[in-house]
Image (cartoon, rainbow, N blue to C red; front, side, top):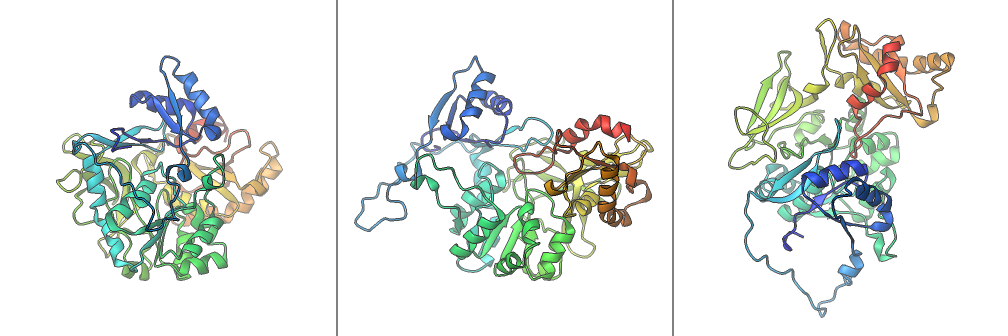
Length: 461
């Protein structure tokens, strides 16, 4: 598409029609390339949202149609190379659009210039793949291509390092209307086993599921490295995987500023520091103190690293709003939350909810946990039971029984919390079927939206 002079915009089909239409207006986009049979309801909804705009919808050709001999070529087969671009692009022009997760409203389209692309592929994060096994076969099938994390490991890594990115085989070869493979924890393991991957890029949800299976853990132990991003992993899960011998580590990045950290070092992992990260030496980070031994990560623009979004008032760079703490002995950092997640109580005392949500969310009885309490006298926790533990919220006895079931994990979270951050049993609020927890396309909880949705119930506690 780039060679044809077009600017691709990778959009998640999980977005609402209103959200997609909003982003199309902001980017002056009027053409959609998709599988119409799979997304016709979304497309119809988009057209309704923009009645004054002509939306051109084109069917995406199947891979077998575009490349009929892909995977079955012989030396005697003709080979047509891609046409050469008519001219070198302006490095400051948009090369691609990616959208944010939309955790606080409609997702926002973010332009990545050609310079951002080049700098992304030159980052040491990607370069450190050379430290691993010569095959460097990287399993990336668990990630959505519309997310920056997926774009980096599925496209930029193979281009920059010649590592092999392993995806699912296209189902379109069996029929034009065959749906694509949906990643699951089971089929990811099957695929990395069949393709003999040496590394795996994944998400916390799958790690939580694998940690409960001895067979899955044994499979993960065969890999040189398993790294995750896109959300927090409960410490209990990570510790268990690490203790079992899985080379697990986290990476950190974002659509607006790239990936400023290195891939986890085996020496650090051997010491149990799987949750801590090292920032690349060629990335300029400004650590903004928050007054409580935490720091906001601000990624600055340099000649070697152009951030996609510059939102700092005094210098060129990106304020991530992500809050970190420094390792007591190593030059490593751990993310503990976000500035906009900090809960300020009516007393003026401040609670960082992420560590407690991390512990509580690790309960096998729960599918999600969100702390609340802004401008209130004390904090509480909104929890969503796993489907098999659904609670009738009109039944006081059922509520009390479920609170008792999860109370041990609440007590565990309370142990390390200051007195004003501790959760009392009567401040446990349970979601009901009519208002399930909202999640972004990448699976993270929409905290502000959920607290607002349950405002009446919170007031009644």
